[in-house]
Length: 213
Image 1: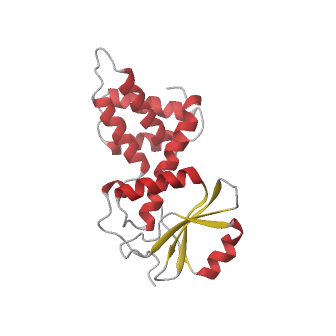
Image 2: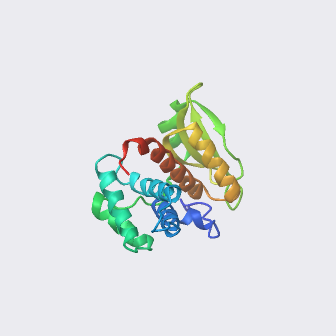
Image 3: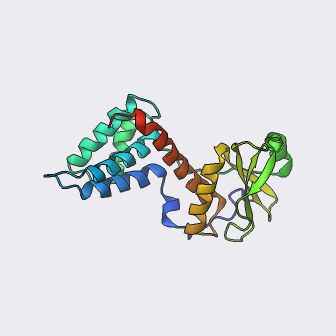
């Protein structure tokens, strides 16, 4: 059995790009419209917010965050316009490689239940994902809890894959809305990537007040 079930070769472009690259591209785009003579606080703020999102995945603590963002900002001012060049700065400054796209491990029902049956009740977020429309994505949590397990179930193969061992229902809802708007037939792997991106955005919002930009 192929453990990477329902691979979608026609998935939307954003689901093929890691969160760092998406954020860095947006930072480059916002920097490009800043007037160097008079400045643009709004665009500068948006640029720095996207830089923060890119770096937060690699260096979630100060002072590495501020140091790396300063280096990225200097590179943009120096004329750097390529995502890969900015990614190299992040790698050098933080000492870590960029976050890879999620890869799901599909297991049978016995293995899944043995590991995760204690999470509680299921809340479904779509029953017909995937190219064959046979993937269910569910959020398993205890009654009244806001955090839980996000997973996918392949009805054809009767296999399960964990998307996130622990996540917040708000993030799941946001990922669901974005995934549904982008491609209602996307694979579980691409849904996991969308969830990774919205999680990174949430981390950015929480870290922003503590980071010197």
